[in-house]
Image (cartoon, rainbow, N blue to C red; front, side):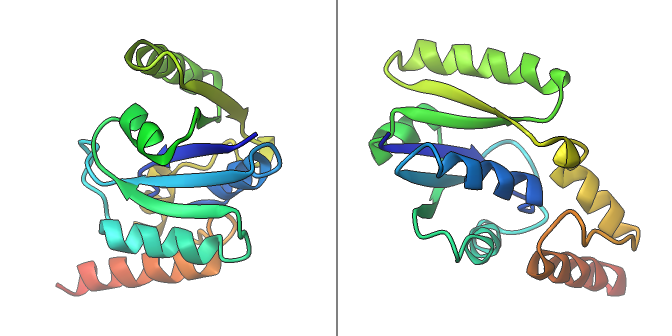
Amino acid sequence: MPSAIYPGTYDPVTYGHLDIVRRAIGVFDEVIVGVAADNNKSPLFSLEDRIRLFSEATADMPRVIIKPFRGLTVNFARRCGSGAIIRGLRATSDFEYEFQLALMNKKLDPEIETIFFPTRSDFSIISSSAIKTVASLGGNVSEFVPEHVERALLERYRRRRSK
């Protein structure tokens, strides 16, 4: 299959995200990770930092491209020439939200399909929000994120505490 996009905030990228990417490149010729610039969230890391952290985490995956995007996901998919949107599901609670999003995207562009990848059970507890909370309180996040992401989190919270 040609390309698919994998959109998200990735604040920060986790082993769960990377698992979905690895599995998706087994299905698609190319996976374009879309790092959202405007999603009504207040990210800890800048757009540039999130792109850099994801790029470093996928440096060994030549068929993965990291791109920033603004606006609707379906418009980003069209600009990339992709006919599929990849979404990860951690739990049944994710499904309800993701299903509604997939239906809205289908209404906006009937040519683009949403493909769901259930997260491996050992990654089902991982969320970027939970990781940021643990890291902000000085906890160990090494089993949830790559080493370079852990360093970036620790540095970011160290700077915040010293202000």
